[in-house]
Picture 1 (tube, rainbow, N blue to C red):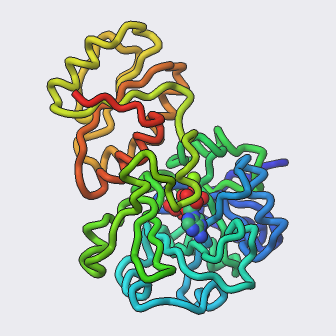
Picture 2: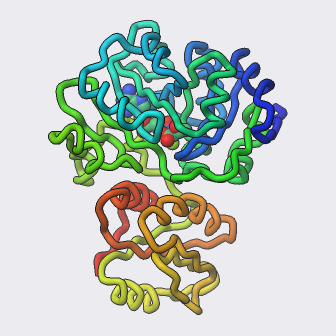
Length: 333
Ligand code: TXA
Ligand code: MG
């Protein structure tokens, strides 16, 4: 299959492609998405094929106007409405009861549908010009980190999709917060840039899915049960007091060339094959995590030590993705 890589000046070809059942990778404020017409089952099949994604993992439907909601759900609770009013467009996905006309291919047979209204202007223009609602998972091969740069998308999906729109970087760098508002409770199934604290300002009783806290409870968000969400290298998270973390990593590095370190704040490990700085704040860490994991892989690094400190806010989302990348291999110092 040939893939056209385009910039965002003229989206008419990509929009037409979506309308005709093709696949288009587009930037969003979180990560790149691999889109197809949510109401065309053959098109949705192409998403699963391009990603190599298991069919039991449902997709998010992306909209560009609240008037599209009526084609997806007829059951928007006052709490769901409150979250839409305050956080849409933006990095928030809401789980709502679905209408029977929403395909089982999109929802993996669940009675609910995931809906997101992205704020990225290129994403909005594409959806609008296409005239369809766009089912889109993150635009990575199933199992690898979500792409936040066009080159990451090209590495994974070149010649597997019809179009790739180069939108430069993604502002946030981690996937959207997924909140289940389909029942009486308001539950965060996947943490993201819209944090628990932000949601509690409007819905004080909102809570995190226990599966996000205990490693032994099965998460409700089907995608979160897959542990392979990671670079090829083995990741070891080292967390605690910063000086102790650094001493531990310095002592642990043995195979210089094949060992990398992801630092939290600039620091020099002279004996590591590759040292990358995730930044000085959890916002930076979120922004850099996925693309840096890919950089370690490109350089053939086999073991990555990741400096970490537990934090609140978006730090909850960073921890969730980092622990997954590490297969919960975490050293507390
Ligand atoms: O930021 C994002 O959300 C990106 C961009 C492209 O919008 N998309 C994304 O999609 O991360 P994906 O498919 O990689 O992750 C969607 C997550 C999966 O964990 C999936 O299991 C969950 O949302 N999900 C989808 N529909 C669901 C439903 N009806 N109930 C519970 N979880 C659902
Ligand atoms: Mg994904």
